Length: 72
Image (cartoon, rainbow, N blue to C red; front, side, top):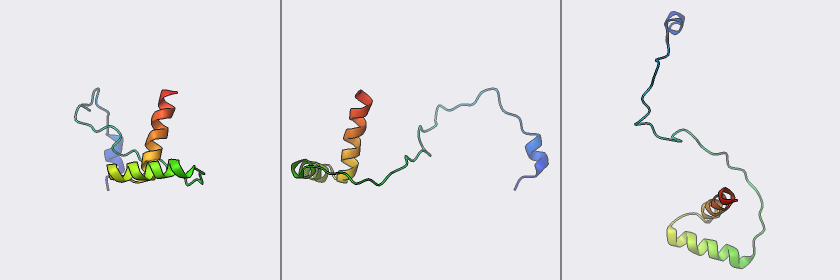
């Protein structure tokens, strides 16, 4: 651990280089469990599509809803 004196002597630089930084690296969206009623044909469509894309169907539904809400 650093000593208290080291923290007191700390000064921020005028500029930092974030050109090699990764956006969202430590961001983890909060997931909420919900019950959602879907028509059987809609659910089968997403399950089939998710299988083709090698994803979970819930993830695929979430991506579609996110894209829709960003357009609105």
